[in-house]
Length: 339
Image (cartoon, rainbow, N blue to C red; front, side, top):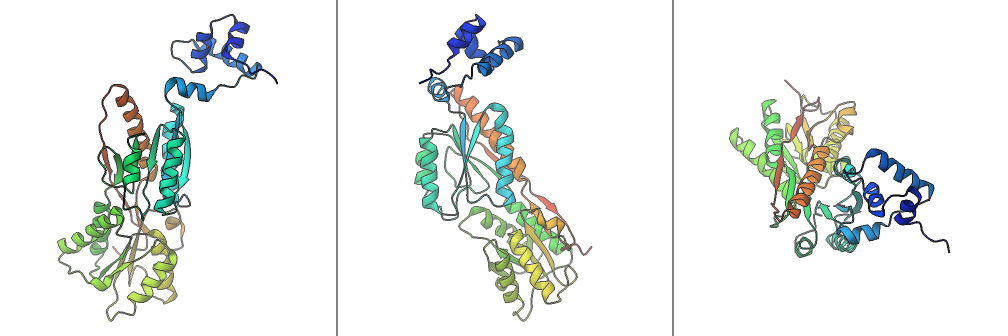
């Protein structure tokens, strides 16, 4: 069996100390660029492979972080992940991505797997079936956890979210400013705080504009095109259908637009529509859909910055829980623009 090349083989070849070789391989600032290049070239020539396990045992760090999301086949979560990676990669971190598929039991298993992998931190957007949070509370004592978008109020865990209340308020206010008085809300799953906050923003915007709530105009949905279609069919069975629809999901908003157009109901002349998340398809349709942007790339980058700050604070013995709230952005397009 061929013997593995060590830093001592490199030091012997270059006639420098093993300590200098180690520092050069780890990009130590006190080692000159010329020495680093010599060491890296020699390491490549000798087929040297760094022992990451030994490094992690020595430093107490694995330079790995975990990300748990409900699913990755949406532009929102994939954009958040990209933002985290872009911020952490220059610091030498590698990312392990897990999906909960909205299943709290799978979420628990993934959390356990990441802890066993000794990740240096975990970024998490909780599943909609997560009600008991003991598994998260137990995990936070072993590694730092940062919630993004979907969160639970747990002491000691930092959060990065958008102001969903403000987003719901602004979306509803925009529809009212277009002359609409019968504003419907397609409501997301209230087990998640983000949808409760959007709903509260909708309610307060109606109230502040002197519009009484019509409970027939509030319809619970999943984030799917099919649910948007079915909700629209239900609304148009009412004696007085709405003249505006604020959907907590872009996909449901797409279903709304399809069903309205199939029934020759004009958008925005007869009904205005606005969605949520600013999915890429919203701006490229024949009738572009207005939407609330959650700035997912910024959310990812700031989540990563919060983690890096935590690591630095921990070295100094100080750790501060951070609550970051980002401003939503309204993108007004043809589906809601009357004025």
